[in-house]
Length: 164
Image (cartoon, rainbow, N blue to C red):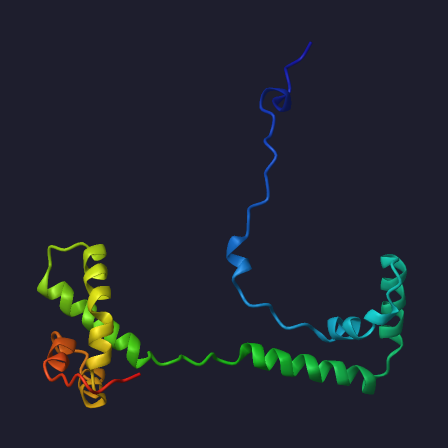
């Protein structure tokens, strides 16, 4: 009779491929020289993918070094652009104002929830923004360590001045 096989006792589970959601948000990598050549040959596509692939591969092999260098140059320039460091944009003055106002409200009312602070801030936003003058904005833009900088700036209000 013999022993029962392990496969019949413990059938293997089929592994499902994992989702790669993290790859969706990444930027698209630059195409290579052959991919650029393939894009330029797109007009030759007539519906039969196998025939098109053979045609393009044959033409790519027949290209001399000068003609391939054109596509390789373009691929290298796209790769250099892709690998170049991104510029870090500076935080806008408006966002600095919002941050300072939020910190000030949080210090004045530590027991409030974020939603209550948001609602209180929204009620006073238009009045605060219209009453600030540029010199007051400059006061708290460069003093991030100051406490309640927006309140200090708001203490010197002139209702006629608007920043909009």
